[in-house]
Length: 114
Image (cartoon, rainbow, N blue to C red; front, side, top):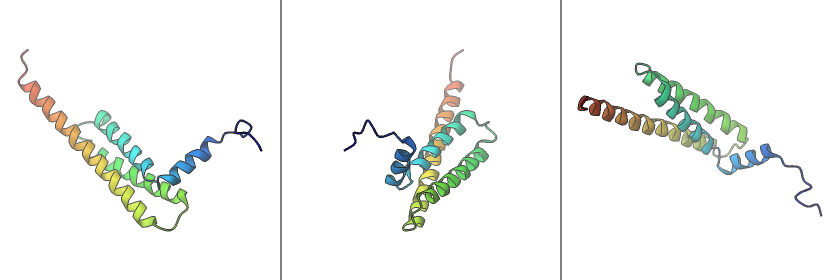
C-alpha cells in the first residue's frame, strides 16, 4: 500500500473536486463580490451604473463557463439560474451599501467644520 507522501499532489484536481462539491455556485459569487468591490473603488462616478452592468455581464459569462465545466446535465438550468441570481443580488447589495456610504460621506462633508 502506497503512503500518501509517495503520491504526487495535484492541486488542480482538488480544485475541480471542490468546484463539483459546491455545484459551481461559490466561484461566480466570489467573482461577483470581487467585481462589485472593484466597481465601488475604481469606477468613476458618472460611469458607475454602466460599470455595474459590465460586472454583471462578466459574472454571467463566469456562471455559464463554470456550469459547462462541471459537465453535468441534470439540474443545469436550476444551477445556472441560482448562480446568476446570486451574482446579481451580490452586486446589488454591494452597490446599495456603497452608495449609502457615499451619501453619508457627502452629508458629513456638508456639516464638517473647517
